[in-house]
Length: 391
Ligand code: PLP
Image (tube, rainbow, N blue to C red; front, side, top):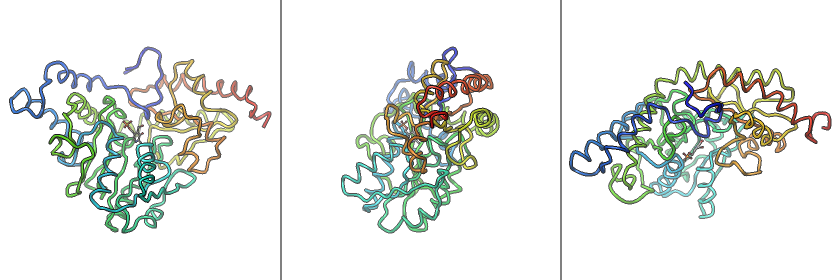
C-alpha cells in the first residue's frame, strides 16, 4: 500500500512514519464524538477512560508488559527525561551512566545535569558502534542512580545488548533505563525475560501520530513524576490525557506486533538490496556500524569525497527522502556525534546518508532509488574538490 503523497519515496522512517489508516480510523471517534474527559464520573467520560485502558493493554502487549506498567507521555523525549529525573529523585544518588551515542533527549539531559553538578559518565562505543557490557560493569557503582542505554541507535540501527547490561545493573543495585524508540515494533521485546526497569516508546516511529509516547516502569520500581499536577496516570503524570493519540498509539502497537516478522523478512530484504547495490556499484562506499547487530530497516551508508547534504538535496529532486542522521540535529553543520564516537573521521562522517524503511516501502521504491543514486554520487564526486581524482 502506498500511503504517501504521490511520487514521494519515503526512506526516512527513523525520523518519523506515516500514520497507518487503521490508526487514523481508530482515533477519529475520539476527536469527533467521544471527547469527554476520561476523569469524569458519568458514562460520557468513563467510555473514554475505557478506550485509554484498551490502548494501555495494546502497548503493554507489544513489549510483554502488564498494562499497569505503562504510563502515557507526550513523547519519547519526555519519557527519557522522566526516567532519569525520577531515578535521581528516588535514589538520592548523584551519578548517571550512559553512552556517547544516545539521542539528544538523553545527551542534552546529561549536559543539563552536569551543569547542576551531577556526575555524567558517557561510555565510548567500539568502531562498529556496539558496546561491550564489561564497559558498563566497570562504570556502574554504588554512586550510580541510573544507567541509560538505547536499545537501537537511530542513526546506524546498531543494537545494544541491553538485556545483558540490565542484568549487570540489577546485580549492582542500579536502575536501568533503555530508550527503545527505534526498537519497539522492529524486533521482538519481552519485558518478562529481562531486568530492564524503565523503557521509552515513541508513537510516531511506529505509524502512530507525533506527540504521543509511553514509558514502561517495572512493577515495584519507584517513580517520581516529572509532570506534576492532577491525579491522571495513577498520579504518575499530571495533565488531561491526549485520548485520541493514546488510542492511536494502542492501535499502532497492535498492528506493529503483527508485523515484526515482516520487518525481519521483507523489509530486511529491501534494505539489504539497497545496501548491496550501493556497495557493489559505487566505489569508496561503506556501511557505518555493525551489519550483524542491527535493526532490519536501517542502513547508514558512507560515501567518500562528498558531503551528505548535497546527496540529500539531489535525492530530494527525485522526491526521495533520506537523512544525514538524526532529524533532531538537521541543520547542524557538525558531523554526527554517533559516527564520531565510532572513531569515523569528521570528513567521512559528513559523507554519510541514512536510509530507513517501513512496512509501506515497496520494491519499486528501492528500484527507483538505486536507479538514481550511483549517478548522483558520480556527479557530485566529479565536481568535488575532494573527489578521487583530486584526493
Ligand atoms: N530517542 C530516539 C532514539 C529517537 O530516535 C527519537 C526521535 O528521533 C527520540 C528519542 C525522541 O522522540 P520524540 O521526538 O518523539 O520525543
